Each structure stands twice: as structure tokens, then as C-alpha cells.
Image (cartoon, rainbow, N blue to C red; front, side, top):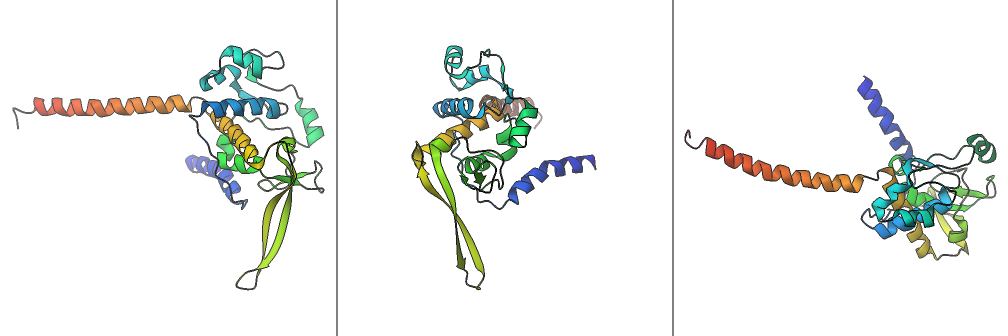
Length: 242
């Protein structure tokens, strides 16, 4: 019974996300692309780390994506942190709740909780909505409390709703995001920036994943080689009997 409860508790968030009814865009994730991970880390530190912490991630883990300690200090440490410190923020949770309605969640494992495709769709899905306190809403997260911190880069999108009639005479609504005011980046450039950020968030959720996969392949090759040797030894040992 305890195992069943545990399994259900793990599946409930997945079911909740599936029931949101959002067609998710495929995130172009590549854990081997260190240039993308480095660009994503820069975006994360400059735009996300102002409010969101990543308390399970240390700056020195960025060496795993090809950065030296000198590069980390020069480009990613802005508040006197040490390279061995975790990615925390100075914002007070009580004050953040008063200002935003809820304290911004820690993003250490957000990619493992939500999924890369959801994050990719979410970060590209903000649109202007005057009914919301922040002036923003999101196609992947209706009535989202977070403002669009990347709006200067993406620009202003609006949600265009069109009605049509299907073959059975039922009214069907189609939702489409339209770029009403361009930002500093073109749509293609913004998509690349978001892909880099999501790529880094996936890495941050499990920094040792690439190393673990490489080690796993080595172990599998060793076991395969050992199997051949053991089989040959067994055949030689029983040769006189059979």
C-alpha cells in the first residue's frame, strides 16, 4: 500500500501537467553542446537568479560545462559570492510573497519537475493580458503570477482567438500568439536564447548526468568483455567433461 501511494504521488504532477491541455513544443536540448550551456548559464544568472534561487547548485559545478573558475568569477558572480557557494538570492521570501503573491520557487530541479518541453513552451508563451496584475499571462500556465522578465528581448505578444465551425457544426476556438511589438531579438534568435536557457536548466537538474552516462557505457563494455572471457573460461573448464 505504501508503494502504491508513493507511485501515485509521483504520477499526480505528471497527470496534472497533461491535463493542462497545452500542445508543448519540442525543446532542442543537447547536453553535449557546452557553448549552449554556457550561454544558458549566463541568461539564468542575469535574468532568473534575481528572484529565483538554485540552492542545490554550486557555481563551481559550471566547470563541468567548460568554464574556468576565473571565467565564473569574472562573468557570473556579481554579488561577492565565492565560486563554491550555492546559487542563492538575497530576496526575502516574505517580502517576495507580499510583492508577487507567492515566493518565487527554487529552480534547482525545475526541469525534472516540469520537463524541458514545458519550460520551452512556457518561456515562449507569454502574452499581454490587462486583466492580470502583472499585465502578463501565459498559454502554458494560465493566470501565471510571474511577469515576463524577457519581454524586452522577445517583445509583446498578444493572444489571437478565432472561432470556426467543424464538420459537425460545433464551434471551435483557435488560439494563436501574434507578435504585436518586436523586441531586441528576432523570433528565431529568441527561440535560440530560450533553448540555451532550458538546456542549462536541464543540466542544472542533474549536473552529473553526462558523466554518469559515460561511466555507464564503460561499465557495460566491461561487462560485455568480461562475459566473453567468462564464457570462454567456462567452456575450457568443462571441456574434458563434455
